[in-house]
Amino acid sequence: MSAARTLRVPGRHGYAAEFSPYLLGRLACATSQHYGIAGCGTLLILDQNESGLRLFRSFDWNDGLFDVTWSENNEHVLVTCSGDGSLQLWDTAQATGPLQVYKEHTQEVYSVDWSQTRGEQLVVSGSWDQTVKLWDPTVGKSLCTFTGHESVIYSTIWSPHIPGCFASASGDQTLRIWDVKATGVRIVIPAHQAEILSCDWCKYNENLLVTGAVDCSLRGWDLRNVRQPVFELLGHTYAIRRVKFSPFHASVLASCSYDFTV
Image 1 (cartoon, helix red, strand yellow):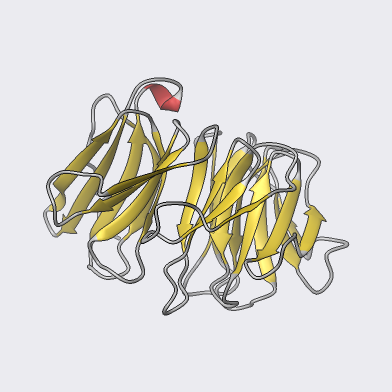
Image 2 (cartoon, helix red, strand yellow):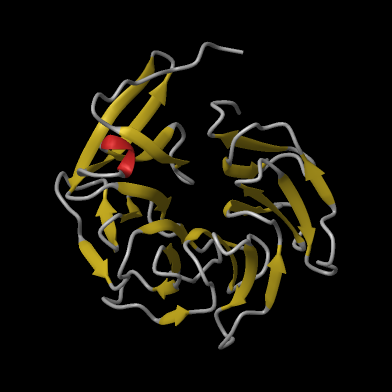
C-alpha cells in the first residue's frame, strides 16, 4: 500500500469528505474553524495524483460547513450544509460562489445527500431543528418537510436501491425510514439506547442498514424484521462518528470514532 497523501489546512477542521462520482481522484472536503463551534467554513476541492494532493479550488462560507455531497447529474456541481441553517450550491468550474443558498432550517444542518436515482435531482438535508427537508436544487425552496424526530438529526442518506427512499438517524435514539411519496415515516427503529450519529445502506442488500452511536456500538438492521439487530460490532471506546459500507464487499464496513481510531 502506498503512503498516505496529506494536505495540511491550517485553521480548518475537517467534517466530511466525498470523492467525485465523475472525476478520478477529485475530492471535496467540508471544513470548519474551531471544530465547528464558532467561526467560518471552507469547501476544499482537491485533486489526487501520483505526487500527492493538490488544492484545485476553495470556497469560503460565513459559518462552519458540516457535510458535502456531489451532484449525480453534473460533474462540477455539489451541495454543502452549514451551521447557519443553510445549504449552498457550488459550481467548481467557477471561481466564486455559491450559485444559490437555501435557507429554511432554523438550526444547524448536519447532513446532506444527493439522490443517486437517475433522472431525479433530489437532495435531502437533516438538521438540529429535528426536521428533514427535501430539495430540488433547481427550485429556490424546499419541496417537503418531514417531521417526527424528537431530537437532533445527525445523518440523512438515500437508499442506493429504492427510488425516493431515505434513512435518517437522530439523537432521539431512532433510525427512521422515509418515502418521499408518503406523508409520514414508514419505519421507526429504536436502534440504540444512545444518540445515533451515523447510518448507511448496504450497497448489496436493499434491506440492510448499519447504525453507529454514542454507545460505541455498530448495529445492523434488516428492514424485514427490525425487532432485533442482525449484528452488533463492538471495539470503539468512544462515540462512533461515521460508518460506511464498502462499495465493493457486502460484508465489509468502516467506522471512525472520537477515540481517534478507524
